[in-house]
Each structure stands twice: as structure tokens, then as C-alpha cells.
Length: 76
Image (cartoon, rainbow, N blue to C red; front, side, top):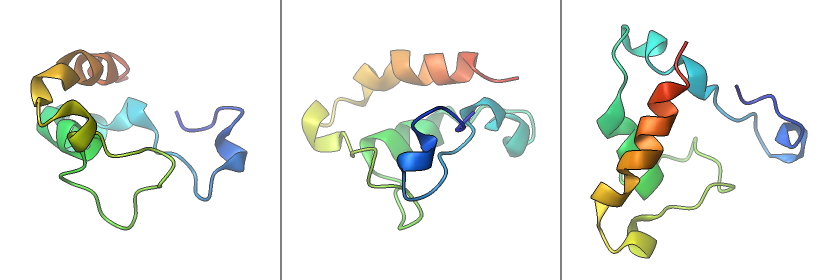
């Protein structure tokens, strides 16, 4: 929910990942989450605390599937 014990050490508050579907009209934005994690949908609003993984993964977005599924399971 972005309010964990390390949150106060970051430059800005982390996003609440439990409300992504609610904030997207009830549909989980899987492609958006994938694009943010791999770096394709980054803007200056995103914290540098989370690295972009596109180069690390060699463009293999399929490896992000389990992570995206996990984030989807967090929805309330």
C-alpha cells in the first residue's frame, strides 16, 4: 500500500499497488504495469528507487508475467 517501514526513506511516497484496478475503472492495467516495470512507460514522476528492467531482461517482457500476476493479486 506504499506505507511500509522503508517508505519514509524514499524521496516520494510509493504508489499504493492495491488500487490499480479500482483506479482504472475496475480493470487491472496489466500492460501498463508491465511497461512501467520494464521502463517503457516511465515519466519523471516515477522514483529512481525502482530501476528499469528492460535492459536487464534483454527485452523479454514475458519474464514479467509472474510479477504482473502478483501485483494483480494484490488488488482489493
